[in-house]
Length: 275
Image 1 (cartoon, rainbow, N blue to C red):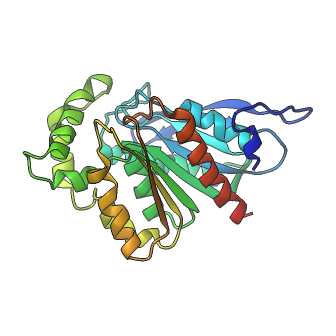
Image 2 (cartoon, rainbow, N blue to C red; image 1 turned 180 degrees about the horizontal axis):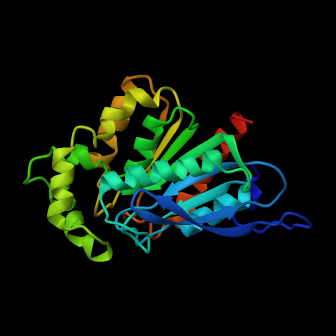
């Protein structure tokens, strides 16, 4: 890990960085995958990066920056989104993420360091990241960027701002996706709100480091509803969590470099601890 390359290029005589594409077989057909491989020989710590809903912001700039400092980064598109086969559903997001993690853990050609695996996600990708961390004890740490606590906010009263914003998310996303609708998304989260609460996962986080970065002006997932309840609960349980916030919108539109720097520093520190 070398943070001096966060915003500048390295030079390579051998084993330069490269870009790979994979088409994996998921439960509903093809999953489209992009792999940013860091330069240098040998194994590299690896980040599975999950985008949000519907995924207009894909965080390629974050992936590029993490690659420059020494991470392999794996991005993917959920079933029913951005060219991947099948119908979109939040449950399918979780199955797809498991498929990707299994690929990383079994692949022997790309140089993934199986002892230094990390997960990160933005918005609904933060929800996916929390579910992955809870389900997979082999993961070393997690980053949640403006996460969407689907189950937590579904329990809010209908006349509250966080609940209204969640309904807006359900309404606005399906036009970009296949095989879903606002009603289907609502019904899925309503039926699964207990297991879709990030707060329900905390015991399974254990003592593994978690970094949550909120957005003060978040117009989709305000941190007072989507971050602070489970962050405070995890702190009371003695969990290893750091929370910060940037004065920006849900996509970190005018603080991309700050978001990238904070994420990179956290992950680099965790990767160095597990060398």
